[in-house]
Length: 313
Image (cartoon, rainbow, N blue to C red):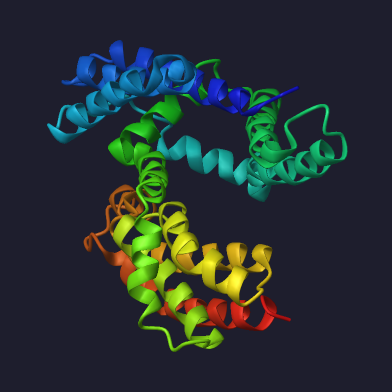
């Protein structure tokens, strides 16, 4: 049976290749510490299960030490020229996006197939496994259709990852932070404080606090996956599901969407909001966030209404 370990191996091999490319990149003044950063990240995916808590903790401290002291550098390896890019775009038109569409299509088809035949892949991780297969299929399609050099996808991926920098590990870190908060009982503590502010027996009040809490904790923590264990433990499970008899699927799914509204409004979600501004060389570092607030606030209101309407029918 294919398990989540398959996804870890795919990601680990990719980061290991990035580490090797970095080590041989003489244009990067900090190539050895940068290579160590990507090598440590590769190790976390490839061997994290064997390192134990202490080993993984030391690995994370190593990542933070390299990034926090500014030892993560960038090379100056050139990509395709602007003329080549325009020529490829003119020749292939919108078909150039087909490989990118393979990934979500494979994720959808694979999820349905793996759940129909649960002996092939772990049904609990069907979507992630299908997504990893989608990436590999799209990569194979690009090789067959576009005929790039063997190292081109990895060099271009490496160059993009250097632009992203330390923010590449932010989703993992923030998701882990949510798990730590949940294990430490932060959700129960928050629930005890917030519970006093909700009018007794008020379903609407509890839903509003849950939705706003998901967005606010996401703004603080940078990721809805980190906020969810806290708010689910504080409001979602004990009050909305157990006391009010709400639908767990609706409360969890739309609650995450409410959290994602917070993602649109926070610099803590650096990989979503700050990195694009840097890649596009925007003058306003927070320009992406400013443009998204007008969408995020109405979406948050709608999501809270959806929880109230559809979670308790």
